[in-house]
Image (cartoon, rainbow, N blue to C red; front, side, top):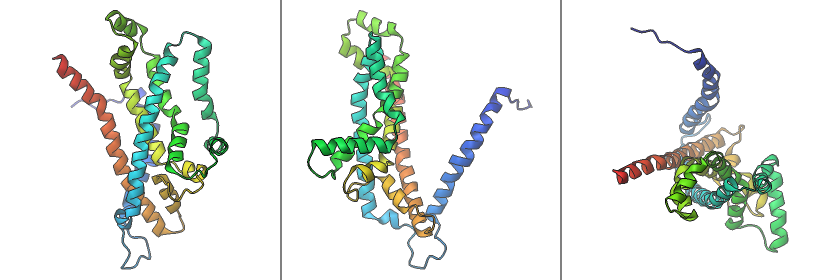
Length: 273
């Protein structure tokens, strides 16, 4: 039997694996266990599955997922043509300006950007900022760069001869964009959708700081934030249940979106065959 040989380069992954184990896997397992364990001092009438039966929570859960999907698709629709123009811009000044418009806001605190947006909306609209439309607008404004950046990284490295070849085959710019550019950046599109989706549903500051009345327009992140009270084991158990339910939902979304490139390749291969 051959002995297991470990290359020196593979040892470089050891600190990363230890970090993931201690700060990701173990906390997740602990949260899952905590969501099913009755807190100390719980009486016979205490219901460990209270959050699972809470209709108000499920209403916020569905609204959060719907908002996450809507914001992700909106960011994708805005990002695709923006990145396509950015990567194909021949004017260096225009390219620098377009890239700066995306990168520069990332150096600002999220709270500063939210308060700036609130100030602009207050000046434009002389009405209370307390409906879900403003929550949607704030989410797109804050999380758009997280869709643009992965798309730019991938499409910027796209060989220019591919675009030239598509034009030689008779494709116009729109056909090239749909049939060449989008399939080439499909993995980046899926990555951007997942990142933006997670940021939206777990956001806290947008609802709390942008809206006048955040009680009626909450995300899952707001519920977790309100329930996270280390001095109250009952609230912590509820918060753990919310996190566990959210993990199940986000995992379903993650695997569904991640399967899109695989399904596309098989579908395309079936057509070619």
